[in-house]
Length: 141
Image (cartoon, rainbow, N blue to C red):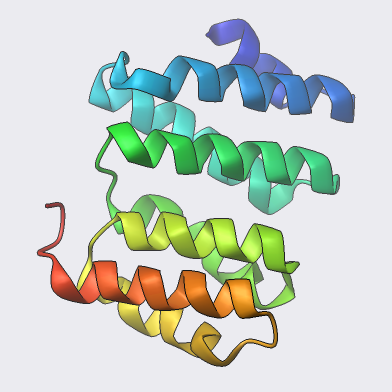
């Protein structure tokens, strides 16, 4: 896992892309301890925020989204994604909305609501689904 984390920060986009996917594989199934999973997800979120290559951003967000199936992460872990949401393409934005919804934290509702009127139908659906998750469940449930 250390090698993949190091490669995630490497100079070659393809290497970063592969590292993000490999880290997603490690997260899948919930086999890592919670603290290790949070470390990996925080690195993937950081890579998404600072990444110039769209493919790497997509791989990182996909891995984070899959991790959210098996782990419960705090909203705070994903807040670095929020400032860039308005500029994301629909696919990346949809993934991000799903990630925010997975927190089941009502504090995510104001972060999700602006996208209920997005031009892209899939983004609107993802925003509605995320809003339902964060308003119908207690935080961390």
